[in-house]
Image 1 (cartoon, helix red, strand yellow):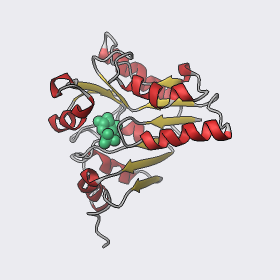
Image 2: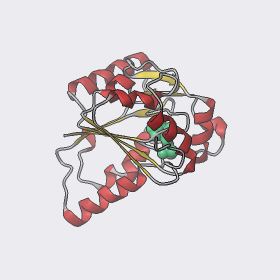
Image 3: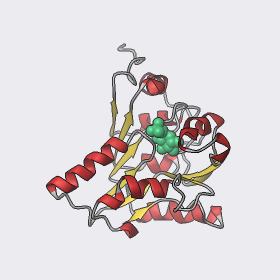
Length: 215
Ligand code: GLP
């Protein structure tokens, strides 16, 4: 089974539950393959702000998963276009992601697919929106330290997943969730691509749902 995983504050609770379940019930991840959405360019895997480091410390180090079966784009690769090709091919080789977990950016980004991303995109290099860098600056010592570029799985690859679960919590996500639920597919709002997928579940708290209209 292949799990598509996400970083950010939102999925932390899910990862804590998976660890608890592994420890208490012995659920095994020995045969699980994971593939992550994205990685900052310029941060080696050892950097505490790299998404590889996040995944190892928040999840993988606490499970019986084989680290070689966990995949993230390499933000320290020498040749980024080759790295995009490698990661895109890897996703194809895994056939399809069985379950993709997603968070959502305040501007509607999924992975690091910023507004304006082609819905047909595969793994590519992104120039991060200033608002995204600001939102993620809380993890760094200053906004200048937030990388300007990232590698991300493309929207077409996300849509190839068999099932998608999008998580959102807090009022900072309310406008994005309103646009996602009430709006139409629009490349200016990347998460709206999920409307083209037959099996998406949104799990959100009351604050994140507060602007969704019932009609
Ligand atoms: C980050 C990640 C996304 C994540 C989003 C929301 O930039 N690249 O995958 O979903 O922003 O993050 P958070 O859950 O911390 O609000």
